[in-house]
Structures are given as structure tokens and as C-alpha cells.
Amino acid sequence: MTQSRIIDVAIIEDKADIREKWRKFINNNGTGMSCTLTYSSVESAVRNLAALKHADVILMDIGLPGVSGIEGTRILKDELIDVDIIILTVEQDDETIFEALKNGAVGYFVKQYITNDDDLLTGIREVSLLNGSAMSANIARKVCNFFKKYGTVNTVNNGITYFKELTPSQNRALDLLANEGYSNKQIADVMSLSVETVRAYCKQIYKVLNVENRVQAALRAHGIK
Image (cartoon, rainbow, N blue to C red; front, side, top):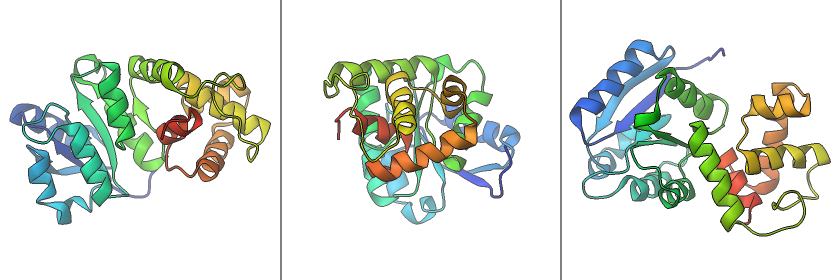
């Protein structure tokens, strides 16, 4: 993947050793990335909004002292519309995941299940450069199961709304995105399309559904606002 700009990453994590570990890892291994902003709490991050406005991606812990990472995601998304927030936590119950995504997170990684640190770097690039989402496979499956359990029941299109403003192929791509949690590459493979075509489909899907990313598109498709 080629990129024309540096991705500025910020970290909100209360444990100093973990915060420093990820900062060093990103700066030493994240080609095209820079991490200079780190905070121990949501409150300290909010006090430095002027600096955070320059961040592209925030890695957010949930179990923070004071304001939680879930509430912090909502607060920061209200103030920093263009920033992408990836949850990096030990929490993996369905309700926590769903609330984080509802509040604006576009990625979710469980710390103890990151077996390959490069997955996190790939996730950062996915959300920042491709307007995508980033989550480990087990979390993506939990999200899809949650949608199927609590989303709007609809006998058409595997339980999601069929949008007349989208072509049949675009609706099929939305189906795979919302029900299976598939990446652009996986959708392309299933539909025998190029990844570029799927990206174009996603842009049209976002436009029609009036959303900014694939997580919000999945929520909207399932009737969850």
C-alpha cells in the first residue's frame, strides 16, 4: 500500500509501560507513522484537544481511571470529527464492543489476542487511508452476531435493509459487510471483483446511508442508530 502522508497516532492508556511499548513500536516499526501524543486518561487528552486535532488515529483503552474509554470515544468524536478511534483493550464482551462502536470507534482489538503486532499497524492504515474498519476476526464475528440478534428483523437480504438507491451488487456487498464482517478483499473474492471496485461500492454505500465508515454502515443496515 502506498501512502502520501504520515499517519499521526495518539495513545490513551493509563498503564505507562503499555503506553510506552506501543509508542515505541509504532515509531520503530510503523512505516509512514508517527506517535508523539500519549495520555494516561481521557481527561488529560481533552485538556490537550488543540494537539489532538492533528492526530489521524487514536488508540484508546477502555478501562481507564475516571472517564472510561467508551465514554471518551463519544466525547472525542464529538470534538474531533475527523479522527479515527481504535479500541485497544482487554474487554471483549458483546455489550462493551457494541457500545464502543456505537460511540464512534471504527476498530477494536483485544490486547491479549494480538498475536502479530503488524495486525495493529495494518488496522491503523486501514482506517486512516482506506476509510475502513479494523478488528480481529473474533471481534468481527461477535459484531456480526450482535447485529443479527438485535438488528431490525427483515426477511430480505439476510436480515438487513435492501436499499433501492443501491444496485443489486452494491446491496450484496453491503450484505457481506454487515452480516459477515468481510473486508474489502474478502468481498472482492466472494463477488469476483477487484478490490478497487469494492472500494467504489463502499463509497456509494456510505453516501446513500449517510455514514462515514463500514461500522456505521453495518449499524444503519441493521436498523441500529
